[in-house]
Amino acid sequence: MSNVYVAASFAVTAIILGWDYLSPQLKLRRVRRAIRLRARRDTNRKS
Image (cartoon, rainbow, N blue to C red; front, top):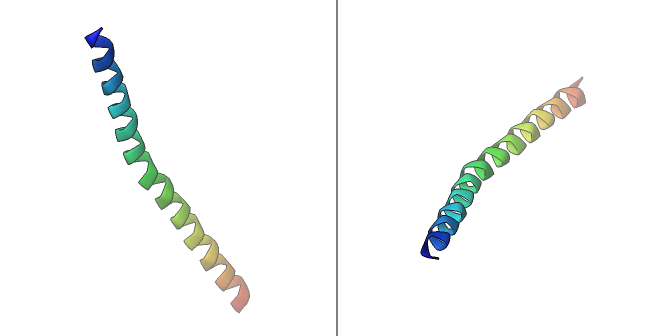
């Protein structure tokens, strides 16, 4: 019975650590895309 709780806590910890790794990566990807699109808009506006 105790092993189930240990396994569940390891699973929850792994999920949280995975999310803590992926969340900043996804946000960085969105920010980089926004920067690229803004730069493209600015160059199109100037020409």
